[in-house]
Length: 499
Image (tube, rainbow, N blue to C red; front, side, top):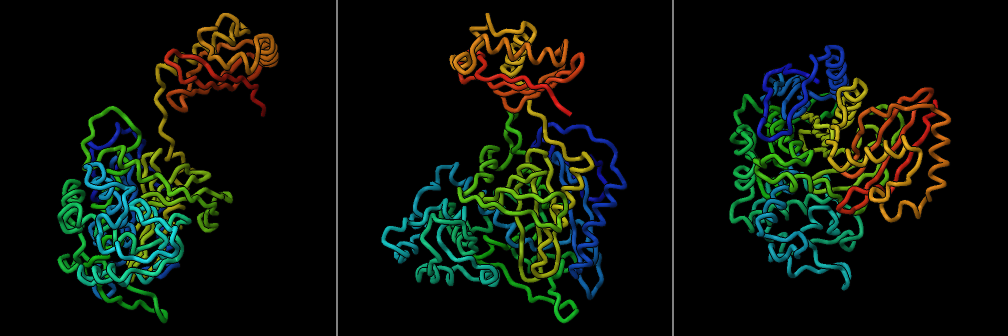
C-alpha cells in the first residue's frame, strides 16, 4: 500500500508473515486520510493528535497534527507521549492469557483463588456463580459500568485497593447474564497478574511486552516522562482549553494507565497483527500466536449495533461482542474488526485492527473523552474503497486442489458416475446420479463449452470456489470436502452467473 512516509517507520521482520509488495503511496489517498483526521480534530476542539497506519509489520503512515502543549505550542510528532486510557486493557488481557499458558492460572477458576480478598463477598443471589477470571476478562462478572468513576481511581494505591476488595462491591446483576463494561474488573485482573507472577503489575507488563518489543518510550509513570515529550491533557470548557490535572500511576493502571508514542504503539499493533494468519513459521513473539488470536473470542453476549452514520458508507448493522481486551465485530465492509477506545481526563484514543487484512489504525488525542473512533473508521473505509485493504488470500491446500480436480472432471463428463471414491457417503443421497446429469446438462446448455482452467480460490483448507468463463456465459461454483482421510466431496454446486 504505502512506503515509509514519515519518521518512525519500523519493520518487525521476524514477527510478521511475508509482506506483499506494495505500490508507491497514493498522494491523493494520503491527503484524504489526513483531511479526515484534521477536520475531525478541528470540529472536536482537540489541541493535538497523532495517527498511524500499520501494515504487514510496518508503520507505513504516521502524522502529527496540532500541538502537544498549548503553552509552548510544541507540535505533535510520532514521539509525543499520550495516555491511551482503556486501550491499556489489551496489555492486561494478554498478560492473563500468557500466565494461563504457563500453567500459573486457569481462566475458569474462581478469581478469589488468586485474590483472596474476594472470598467474603456477598453475591446478588444464592445461585449466583462465583466470579471466574474469564468473567473479568469478558466484562460479565456482574459489576456496574464504571465510566467515568473508574478513570478517577487511576492513582489508587495497593493498600487502598486491598481495602476496597475486602469490603466488596455492589453488583449490577448476577454474573454471566450480560456484558457490562467494568474498569474495576480490569483493575482486579491487574491484582491477579501481580499475585500470580510475583511481580508488581507494571513491572510484569514492561518486562513481558514493552521491553521485548522495543517500546522504550512506553510506561505507566508519567512523572518519569521527559516533560518536553509529553502531550498535556486538556478539556474543552467555556470555549477554551483547560488543562486537566495529571493523575499519577496506581492500581487502576491495569485498566487505563499506559502512556506511549505512535512509534512505540505501532510495534504493539504490529505484534498483535502478526498472529494472523496461522502458519508454520517459528513463533518468536513474547506470546504465542494462537494465544494472541484468542483475544478475538467473545463473551457470547453478541449485540447488533449500527455503525455510526458519521463514519459514512452504506448503513451497516454488525454483530458485536467483547473479547479479551477488545471489542470484536463483523463489519459489513471491513469484515472482522478488533477495536477499542480510550477515554480519560485529558485524553481520548482509538485503535482498529483488521486482522484478516494485516492492517491496524490508531489515533491518540489530548482532549478529555474526545472519542476519535469516527475518523479511524472513516480512514479504514477510505483504504478499502481505494483497494488498499484487501483480504489476505487463503493458501490453496492440496486437498482443495484435489477437490477442484474432481469438480472439473464431473463437469467435463456431465455426470458423477464413476467418481465413487471421490464422493462422500451423503453425496448421492442428497442428489442421485440422474438428477446430477440433468443439472449438469442444463448448465452446459446455457453457457456452452468451458475450458475450466481458471485457478481455484480457497475459502478454507477444506472449501473452494471458482468462476469459469465459458463459450457464452460464466459459471460460478463451489465445493466442500468431507472430514474423511481421503479427499471426498460432500457438496458441489454449479451456477450460471446472471448480470
